[in-house]
Amino acid sequence: MYLNKVTILGNLTRDPELKSLPTGTKVATLALATNRTWKDAQGMKKESVEYHNVVAFARQAEVIAQYCKKGASLYIEGRIQTRSWDAADGQKKYRTEIVLENFQFGPKTGGMGDTGTPRASNAPISDQEAPQKDAPADLDTIEYPDEEINLEDIPF
Image (cartoon, rainbow, N blue to C red; front, top):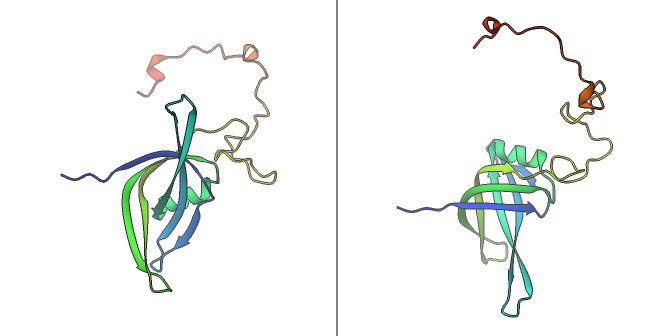
């Protein structure tokens, strides 16, 4: 049995690039950075960064390109694939990438948009993010109806 599985939680190093194949399938290319920290023999803190090239196809590519921006946190699962091609100068080029199979948006950061980057002042706000005009300022002021609930009225 063989297994080619990658799991990464990292930050986007640039905005995803969305392109289309001749067949019409959407392709997004993105780069994730992961950090590793450790202490050396002298007890000094060291840090290294690894950069990962990721390719997403179809609907996943569209969603990532639409909602993710540079600096956003992204959890991905995929497989490693190395492709090769002949460059214009006649040399053979290689690129190792992670082909995305599944992903989740990373944690949101406070005071920022969903993608971890500040929202432009003219960007639309979704219904969930819009401030509630009728929301009470304090939970103690909420008035609940005095109706009793009849258990037979519950549909389940």
